[in-house]
Each structure stands twice: as C-alpha cells, then as structure tokens.
Length: 251
Image (cartoon, rainbow, N blue to C red):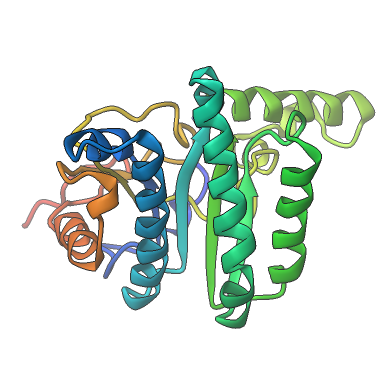
C-alpha cells in the first residue's frame, strides 16, 4: 500500500507544532439566532472571525491556513442567504486583498470554479494572480468546495492524463494522484478545527486530512479568536501522531 502524500515528510517524533491548520467555520446561524438577529448578521460576524483567524495564524507562526467558506452543498440554502454569502465573499477577498498582499500572504481558492458567476470567478483569479509571488504565509479559501467532488474532478484529470499518454497507469500512486487535487502544491493539514460543537467533517479535505488531528470546539465561529485558536493548538500538542505506526517501546 502506498503511503499517503506528505507522510514521508513528517519529522521523527512529535512535531513542534502544526504547519498547516484547516478550519470548518461553523455556527454563524446559531450565533445570530441566540441574539435575535438575522442569519446575515451571523455571517457578517463570521467574516470578522475569519479576519481574526488569519491574523492569529500568522501570530502562531503557521505556514498555511485553509478556511471552509462555502461548500458544494451550501447551494441548497435559500437563494437570499446564498446571495448574501457571495456578497460577503467578495467583500472579504476584494476588500482585504491589498492588505493581504502587502503582508506577504499568498491567496489560493480551492473548489470547483466551473459554475461560478463571472464576477466571482474574476475576483478569484485576481486574488491568486496578485499574490502568487508571496511566500510569508498561504491562505487557502475552500469555496464551492466538497471533498468528494474534488476527488471526482481529480480522477477525471488523472484519467485524461493516462488516456493522452502523459501518465502511465502503473505510475498512478497516491502521491501522483494527489497532484491532480486542488491542493497539489500545499502540504496536508496537520490539524483540522471545527467550531460550534458539531462532531463531523462535512466533506472537508477528506483526502488531505487522512492523518490530521481533529479538534472540535464548542465555541461558535463568530466568537473565534486568538485565545481559542491557541487552545486548539495546545490540544494538538497533547496528541501523539504515529502516522499508522505504533508507539515506541522503551527497552
């Protein structure tokens, strides 16, 4: 059996800390409901929490942060809420892009772009184009993203490469397949955080997070801050990561 991508790069023993953290930002609606506010207010506060998360990630010396902003299943929500979410995405990426670029942040968008409206697609391309040479920190935004959908799209790309002769079937290892994923040049997440008290992964980075540690927090996403982020990383430090191996036994 082939090893999962990036496992061979894992340091011996416990790493000093996570290099890549992925977050499922959950709880905006419940936060708003508890305050008698419309769901839009919760999503707007969620954008502020996302900004705090990006700042905190840099303060915590992370190299990569991936935020789950809009899933392939979110299209099932009421049209008005979807429209508001699209507006907030444009506000977050468009409004923050100059600052992110100035601070050396590389912005990447992962997910299916085929059915995005021209204005969203143009914004995505602009964000990636204007920050592609930045290396201080990478911010990935999972938008119109679903883990199963990503794997299907990757499989189609791999099949096309095999059919064209670009790739031989016998060379299609796990590592080779990972190059067809949206996250091809980004290391797998070490830690996945989900807020709001839910204990499920919701179709998020299901290939990449095969060996990630999961931390589930009761805090609602709009209340996420540096202290909460640090507490999640502290819990990560308590885990023993064996990558399918066994604990070393003292002689």
